[in-house]
Image 1 (tube, rainbow, N blue to C red):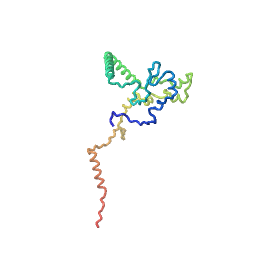
Image 2 (tube, one colour):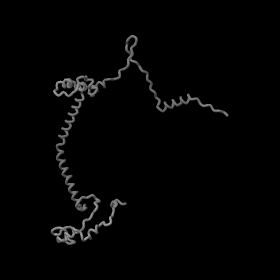
Image 3 (cartoon, one colour):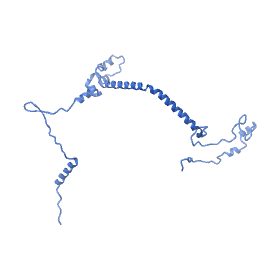
Image 4 (cartoon, rainbow, N blue to C red):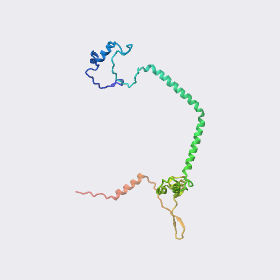
Length: 232
């Protein structure tokens, strides 16, 4: 089946698909009434008989096009192409006029970004003076007391120290303390009370991983006794 072939659809054809029985029936009530008013077969409806003389036909809309589509693409695609080219030219012209002020806008954007970075750095530090006031006291003074005692005690930041806040929120002070913490060398006291740094013996092996495991396998094979052969 080729690409340009029409889609296959199942159709059910009735006994009278063209409705000829109704067309050839001359005793219809509507036809008799129209003949009394001056209409005859072969004429169209209307005051000047300008109506459609052919019977109404069904036509499948395989292309899903709207009403009035003539499928005359060859005559219109050039006009659409020209309109699209004009639209692109207008957009390019507007872009050239706006690029003149682009340097100032870039500078403004950079300054705004720098301000945002500095604000974020300031926010990372845990404020101490802002949380001095107790939430429990505020709720007591307020007229609309909607806070319960357990809620205020749990949400009150005045009960926590700056170290607790920095450990939870992760400010700069907490990071600096974490960086300053280093492994202290272990010391041992002698009988005289002097502190002597304990020396740990370490060995550095020059063997590779494969050589190390090969040596271990040799030791295992030597430790396993060989089975005695039965002489018969």
